[in-house]
Length: 455
Ligand code: HEM
Image 1 (tube, rainbow, N blue to C red):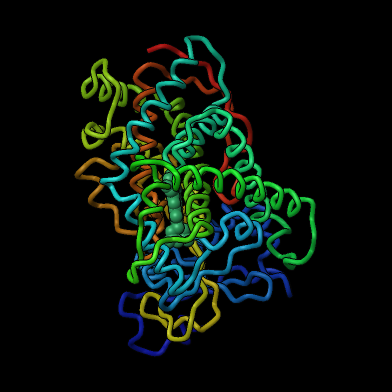
Image 2 (image 1 turned 180 degrees about the vertical axis):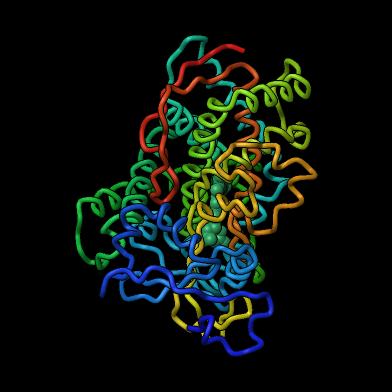
């Protein structure tokens, strides 16, 4: 790998250089430190420089913190960087859906799924998002004690099940939701535990649980797909859109592919959005000025009516609250790629096989792009200040060809849910810090209890 001394002259057009990070232990490198606290470890790597060499077990790694290099890593994914293969838990649940698929198969799937989450389609899911939030608001009252983590998980689950599968009957939604919960938990455990390094054939209790959950999901989704195929007329859910999608040869998705894509969208979108909302409530609770500014906007834009998609563009402060939440608590906190032959970053060659890492957590808390980075300040995102933030200094939804397919869906959902609930209530989260735990997503480390206050 090229270093400050090894780079051929003239290959540092932007003044980038690769510096040596912590050397770690023989054989293990920095694996133990990463394993103990990956968020702190990435922040520490950022302290070394913008391109830092380190070792993860036997793998040579490069950590990048510079937005230009991050942009290159993301936009070159699929061309000069491969994504690491996902573990057996992912594959058991998501099958060969768009998150798991690679190469030509991924391109075909992405082009088939993308139309179902375009802004025009998200518009038609927005009323479901609002009505689910209104239903939840109906169960809250002044003085009530709520576990926000549990409430937001149940709410986003209901929204996902209704918008993706169009399932309305509580029984259907419940058994599907329960199986998805188990699947999601096991994927998270595999991602952050021993499961990631065990060979696929080793049986573990977690793998048995996930197989069982996947069987329930198969049966439930199969039933819903059959009902849709038999049904008359178009339904306004995502599954209906996937059933009519055709690829360039005119072929439809098979039942198995429909199952894989709907489950992928569910798993990709549920916990990410639910955690974002939990962090948003937590941050609002600790920042009275931001809470007041949000309340002022909701009163001004909505008065006493419920929000709809037509209000989204006007709810700029609510959007800024979500963006600032995703800056401080990026639910997806890690991006990786494996360099192929000819890969380059910042004008420097990256040897084939190098694992390149970047972390939203570390970049989003970099004082060069975000002054007073620890402070929750939605005003950063107003028209003037927001323009100064370099591209890829903020990338909670990734970027490049594999950018999140649900970006618009998630932003609209988070803004509408906040608007419905914050119009009526304030949530006073119990004193004490809530810390992030980096599993597959950045989760609060415990239940987040709050008292509901009427506005
Ligand atoms: C706040 C909420 C969300 C966050 C922070 C988020 C973040 C991300 C990120 C960072 C990626 C790229 C991962 C990579 O580099 O491989 C991604 C991919 C993806 N997301 Fe999201 N996501 C969110 C919500 C959603 C929602 C609501 C959906 C579905 C409706 C969704 C569906 C997907 C899919 C299908 C992909 C894979 C795209 C591909 O590989 O081509 N996400 N998401």
